[in-house]
Length: 443
Image (cartoon, rainbow, N blue to C red):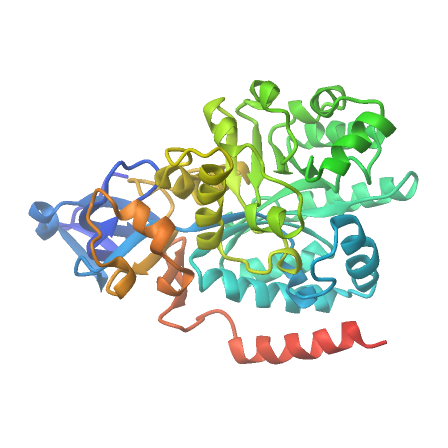
């Protein structure tokens, strides 16, 4: 952005972060500078020598003890499942879904989704998350909460079942797109067929056609478990990668493949396309015993990879700090190679890659003209002793914690600051969530 100058020749901004330690997934090392924000965007980064050239209505003093990171993106989750946390613990995925989760989900009403989403959003923004990708039910409620709080959301109505009921659900997904996509610069909408074992190839083809007609993206679970891969190969008599192309899923504007644990490593180049992103959910995959996604090999082959938590019932946290650390350690340990999955890669996957996959432009990096979506991190604690500009990324990924977040900003507005939620009644959210949980589990 070209700064507008006042009569004294000074650039004017709404807010400036003074002496911020700036780091994102594109930087090889941190930078200490002033970051000016105006009209929800980054006006410019000013060096110390230039700091006298900027005048702001408000100032935030970092004093080289607070880092400014791009806000995190939780790129695959089911936020309202915060109300289902702890159900069916340590069960295989199929049993967990069929015996413990789906029966309770059958009792979910729109107000439950609203309350569960408020609870999950409070957890996420207090951990520096500024964007999330959500697939669930009654998604109008999710969109309303996101716009009220001021957080970005890529949402989709979960589509499941057989014709003709499926066609009605698809129409609901299209209505959601027509009503919410692009709303307030905070919402994108994808079509959300649940998985290849709950939606037939014929219906997946129908969804892909609808997405192309809308120029919309698709968000789907794909190859989460070994069982799912066997189902596609043995029951459907299909190849899991060929199926993406046969149904047209691979050719839509953007395709989000949640999990991708069981992609064969020798064929990863076939999903290395600009419009395809795999969302890696390392904690959930391990907790449900789904396996270890070949993420380091994906990155090597040019596959776009973002990070997600999955739902709170299968993780059980909505915490991108945990996912960054776990993702990196998982690759190093599984392949017995400590050089894999660099800290910078993890940071990029947890921010820019997720925002891009969910359809948000100029979000996820700290660059002039980009959206002012930030997580402010307190470096003045025991776990950061020894950080410097060269090693800060490693400190963030391996030593850092969501507890270190002291502020979260979206579009230049605080959504969380010093333990306070400007756009949420946190005490009411907690009370409502406890009551909703009791109601859902009452026999």
